[in-house]
Image (cartoon, rainbow, N blue to C red):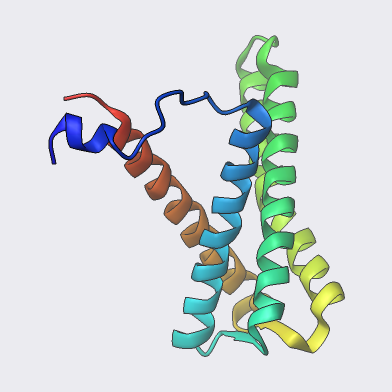
Length: 157
């Protein structure tokens, strides 16, 4: 398709998206990715049980909110230690960030258990914690892959 033909599908006056619109698309896409990953695990793994699509949709929204909250807290911890100097401060910076990231999985698992009870379950080692961590890592990797693809499509040749 030539540039001229491609331009036929774009309005003559295209407005740049607002920050709120970008944020909406970011979270909407993240929720959809989480939904797909969660349902694929539920379908192909005996370690993840989801009773209905509606449950997985609500779980994907909760997961996205909790993951974004975790990342925000982790960034605040890193900022707190960023002005500190010395080996101990550097160690504490990364240890506390790791503690937030790892500890948040317990919070996420308990929140999901509280909200969805028997409708959403993770089975396996440590009452499903390792399975949850694997699911979350795959969700984050899938989100990163989509972001990289999106950015690659925006580059000019």
